[in-house]
Length: 153
Image (cartoon, rainbow, N blue to C red; front, top):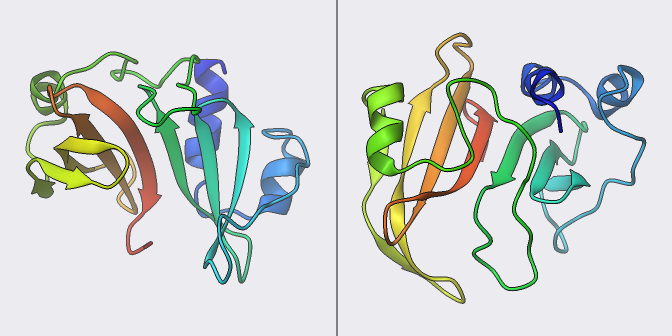
């Protein structure tokens, strides 16, 4: 996905699925429930990119971008990212660019995946209602990137 399109998708957080499809940002794909009684519906417009919509109103709440394939059978995102983000980043690089996280967690074990190197949440520099999350591998490389509305689960 081109940089300007991913930026437009990030700018669409808080908008409805209908508005996003109407703007031509994604094709009218079927929203799927990841599991029974989920509060979210998902849409994956391309490998490594997942959009999460609130089930009750179909408002886009989160964009998940997989930068490293951490689960067998999943694929990493191969498109562009908004500056200053790049697909290969370390925790040290993130913290030097994004400054101080407002929430952080050090290494922990996740079933199936194994040890993760923790995560950091930062406020979006231009959007007061968005947070940016970085999840790290055990060797401190970014494996997942999340853009989310503040207060979303």
